[in-house]
View 1 (cartoon, rainbow, N blue to C red):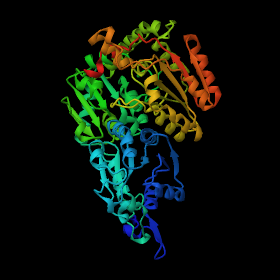
View 2 (view 1 turned 180 degrees about the vertical axis):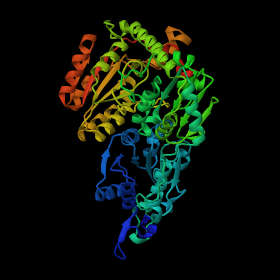
View 3 (view 1 turned 45 degrees about the vertical axis):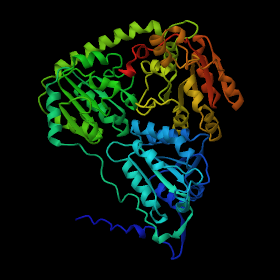
View 4 (view 1 turned 90 degrees about the vertical axis):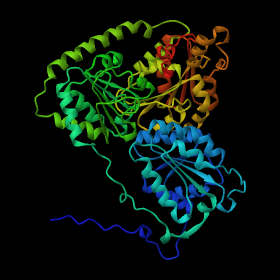
Length: 573
């Protein structure tokens, strides 16, 4: 029997209310956000946007008020990454919106689906130089997938839905809506409002690209004797960790991970590799790049030496950018990996035996690299070496811990050592390299997953940028552990200055001073302590965990120790 689909209502009929029932623009924003699955907004108050708050109260949407709009935007970005849904920040006009710009730009490069709603002067005061009047849309357009003014109250909810669709179209990303105050405050007949019905206006996004190319990749894999795969951000975006694990296990493909793809395979998985990526990229006869661009992290594709490179990505414009590829498949990363795996099933696999030896070869090199590095990880020097801090953090994290990295050199050290125990347990800024993301990320992560422990590693420079919003986490009962790697400098920049201009000019513009951040914790009424001895790092972290509150562990590091990536200046190559 054929299935009969329900007939969609017209958009003006979605809310069936008595004739004459009135609703404001701010309340329409809240209804539309609820339709999009938004249950939390991050905000800093302003007179232009208060009607949205009133609507959110009626719709049961949580309002989290922060102390700086940059934190609101980072928290919305973090909320999107954690939930897979739409993150939302609401800020006032002018400086409220410009303060949030960095967070939007970070989400843009990190492919995070968030919506920033900004206020604006009333339309009647357009070009009259009203309070906080700026060309917000023009400012936001280059760093968003969609940016627009909402022209009328009747169209408020329709524009929210439009912005949300754009955020999830192809490669995910942020959108921006500017809503003038009179559009938000005006009341209209509810039955005249254009409000899309939830679940009735979205297309399927589980595309596998060209099926013929899926078969071609399957043929390359069956013939490959030394394949490897890099699992990137979009593996987590598409919630594809289970199928990615099945893919590498079934085909015996060594796997490397970056960004939020970290944790797809646990640290003890036999096909999880971390320190031998250069070897694999140099010797592989087939490299699959799944869900990460050929940007500076891959030396714009120059790191990939194989003649056969397959790129899988959610965005058409990313494939083949900076480097030619053998095949490019655009669609849902998990669906594509599943389709390729299915295409390899039941056919003769010429390279199967050789891949076993290839994995063993890489494992031997990986173990040799781990052994060679171990003395630096166990370094007992004072001041504390950053590798020792990273080692202690890795040992401290549990299967329940979400790890956030927010810093320059100190997080570069950690990126080579800290291993998340599962998917979705690693958060970093992404390719924009923004400092200050950690406070908003930690707040959002704890709100999404209150049962999980949240551990954030900051540089002393990055913590100082947004750290005061730890008070927001205290107010909202979203505690996390802040570990501050304190070397009194912006060390990633300092090294380059010393190399270029000499030691006598190496501290210009990057010296931060010796800041006792544990006293900041005391001011906030939470746990805080300083650590000078490497043997005390572990006990201090455990005391922070046992405190049950937000906690600051201020670890004093050697200012003259630099990460290999910093010494090689790889971020600029």
